[in-house]
Image (tube, rainbow, N blue to C red; front, top):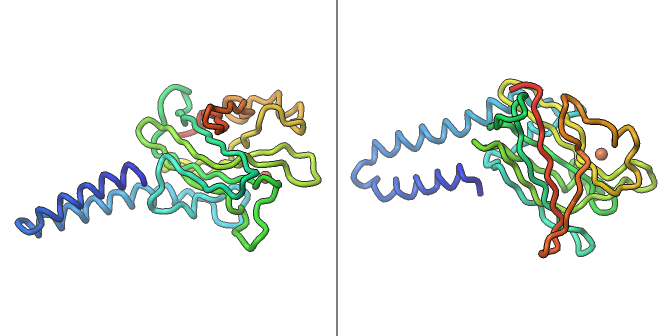
Amino acid sequence: MSQQNETRRDFLKRASMAAIAFPFLISCKTNTLAQKTETELSLIKKNAMPSGTEARGAIDAPDDVSWKTALSKKSDKDEAMIISGTIFQPDGKTPAPNVLIYFYHTDSDGYYGRRGEVRDGHFRGWMLTGANSKYEFSSIKPAPYPNRTDAAHIHMTLTGKNFKEDSINAILFEGDKFITAQERNSVGKWGEVNPILKLEKGADGVLRGARDFKLWKV
Ligand SMILES: [Fe+2]
C-alpha cells in the first residue's frame, strides 16, 4: 500500500466521520485529491512507449503504484532478493521524484514466462519515486537464459513527465561467469554507476543490492 494511498485512506476515514455535518464540503475535497493523484501518474504515462516496442512497460503501471513493491516467491529453490536505490537528476546529487520505474526479469530457471503469462513474465513490477527519489523492490534472484551465455539480469526502464520511457543498463550480478569484459568495463549510458551489483546475504537469508541511477534529463 502506498504512502499516497494511506494518506488518502486516512483522509477519507476522517472525511466520512465529518460528512454528517459538512457533506458538500467533504465531497469537493475528496474529488480534488483524487484528480491530483490520477493526473500525476497519467502525465508520466503519456511518455510511456507503446506496447511492442523494445523499451516498454510503463504503460501498464497500476494506479496505486508506490515507491516500493514486492513480488511473490515462486518456489522454495528461489533466492529472495531486495534491490533498492536512488534516482538522481543529471547532476548526480539532486533527488529525482516522480520517476516511474518498470522492471522485469527471468525466473530461477532463466525463463520469462512459460504458462501463458504476459511477455515479460511473472517477475515484473513498477515503482514511482517519491520526494526522496528512492525505490525498492523485493523479488527472487533471476537465472541466466537456459542454454545461452548471457549473464543473469534485470531489465529496467525509466519514464518521467519530461522524458520518454527508455531502458537503462540492466542490473547484473557480481560473480556471474557470463558477464563480458565489455559489460564489466562499461560505466553505462549517461555516466551511470556500474550496474553490476554485489549482493550481500543478510541474517534473514535475503540477498540485498543497491543500484542508483543518474538521469539524462528531468
Ligand atoms: Fe532479458
